[in-house]
Amino acid sequence: MIRKLLYSILLVPLFCYGQGNNHFVDKGLFATKGTLAIGFPSAYSGTNIYINGNMEYYLEQNVSFRGGLSIFMGTSGADAVFKHNSSLFTGFYYHAKTNNHLDPYIGLEPGVSLTQLKAPDIQFMVLNPQESSYPTRVSPLISGTIGINYYASTFTHLFIEAKYITGNHTSDIKGVSLNEFRIAFGFGFNFWAIKKKEE
Amino acid sequence: MKKLAFIFFVFCSLSSFGNKNYLRVKEDNFQKGQLSFGVRSTISLFSQSGNYKGIGAGWQVRYRIAEHLNSEWFADWIVTDIGGLGSRYDSHIGESMLIYPFSNPNAAGHFTPYVLGGFCGDYTKIEANIFYNDYTKTYSTNTKDRWSFATQLGLGTHYNFTKWFDISFTTQYILHAGKDIHSDIETNSLGEKYLHIHQQKGNNLEGHLFFTINANFVIADIIK
Image (cartoon, rainbow over all chains, first blue to last red; front, side, top):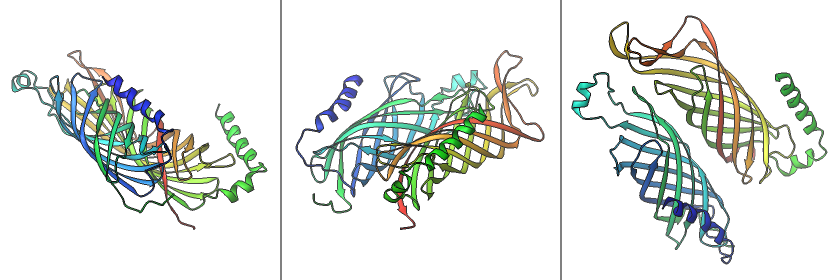
């Protein structure tokens, strides 16, 4: 499933170059996205669920600056390791030039995570007096993103993207890797903050 | 090795200034006065606490002093998991000078190599995970911190996606001078490994090797 999605993300841009001559994105475009994201952690089993949102401004035709927030909603398919695992990212994106309304992109976004491990039940804690106080920690993250937008109309767009995140949650017990492959897709809104130049 | 590297840098600088295209490039592609903002991701490859990979994030501002000279003002913060037994936190605020030894710096679609040197201030904290303390006969943690200053030297390259936007890759060695702080992995009377943090009197030197990838966009041209 993940492989198919990845192939889709990587292959779709290849078909973007022979589709007419109507490049949509340009300096002054403001776009915002809100959707669900699913994360596949490498350190433990289960699928993390996030509410994902970001805002993006095109500084020039093929460069944008983005800020985004992922709010952790829990873990599906296995016992939750984290009680909190939300993250905030800011970074730059490079958009490949196409001749249509498709907008493939890659991005580099450093970020921070707000994480707290889920405490085990009371019985376990009585038997293990040395156990942690499970503090909430803020940790730096490195992330890289690849994806594609389809600007279907003047005000809305569709997108699909894959993000790889790396980081560590550290506390007063053994650290847990925050490495995760995250997929998000859905639709967003966009408008021109600066009127687009006519070609 | 150090001598060879030094001779190489000096030679590169001299050869680039002797290039006949230099003056033409300067006229066509003048970058002096540009102010750019960027984000940075850092990987710390080793430190006094051992060969553990640290992950960091931060920001930077660059001001282009001359066509072949740039300044980078940065702040970053790195977290390292020390073998599952403790954590190390490093924060840096500093400045680096970037020297472009070759001609045609910042041409779109090209790599621009540079030599980098500078200084920074640093705050380090090492925290041990909960362990059984043989002296107090209880489970406890231990934390120590220090401030230091540092000097750095490195090599890197920009890749200029456009005239205004680049991605840069840098490897730099940072040498810190400050109060001693270091940690060792030891075993307690229960046979469990734990992180023993030491802080001896007097100053000490400590080196780190960093790899940084950053993205920068020119936000203003102060001279124009």
